[in-house]
Length: 128
Length: 136
Image (cartoon, rainbow over all chains, first blue to last red; front, side, top):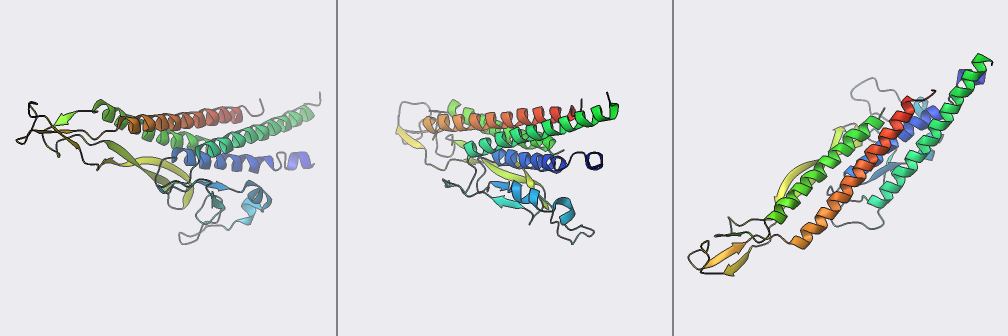
């Protein structure tokens, strides 16, 4: 039964990524006036399409490089500013707010999907 | 759950902007304050922000802190007022170098940045609550 083997499908990973992306954009907004701070983001589609946690290498030693999301050398990218400022900061507040809202809405969509999955399983189990 | 991290990060942003608001109000309070020497005269203060990473290997959690408070290096205005009790031996008084227009602009930017951080916290809070209620 595929529904019960992997009930949440891609949504589980999507929620994790949305969660991390919101942290990243909040960090950009908090650093909107820090000199030389470079705004960062992830390419959501690329990370979703990549194998995910199974495709990353396991870290078993302090000398190993962490290749997972968020780690140095991971999937983090820098934004290209449309109007660079003199202090070397590349955060554009309106853009970040836009991305944050977008991310929040999509998180909400994922949560709605998860909720209806759970409701579906529940009613299937009850058999009412 | 890193939605909780948003609270810490945006909180650090709010704190930094609050310190900035405080320096703006000190500057505005000291507009036109005079002193008897260039060294004693009030210099406009401005915080310098710095990014704090949670730990070295983890680059996506980046809060902000106030690294230092810098003083404006613009020379203080010198006015010839020999009658002023604060005047030096040559009859000069030194006025604080606060530019109130710059301060008002800075205050507006600080309050907007503060608002964005509060908004980020509110949104994160709503999402956390929704996640907690999942399946109910």
